[in-house]
Image (cartoon, rainbow, N blue to C red):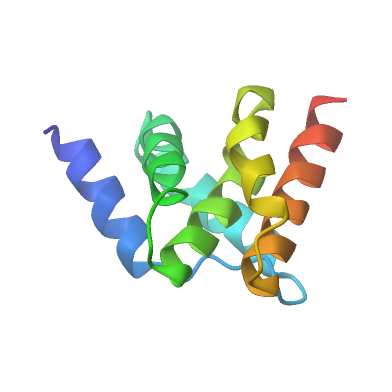
Length: 108
């Protein structure tokens, strides 16, 4: 494991990325942008970690994964996100819908 990957995993586990509150997406984008500016390649590592989190059982980490992907995800990530749009948990379903929307509108 590289030092950057280890840092990204720690950052993801301990940073409260949110997209369910006002300005949550803006703050998440700022935080990710700041770290990426200081640590090139961070966004690619974070994307992989976020995608892996979508398959986890920890509700908060799934939400963080969706929040990260709303900021740095691409069209290739939409299938993984789409699977969560109909999640019975409205917290996860709402975050998945937001992430899908943000990716679609960023790619347009």
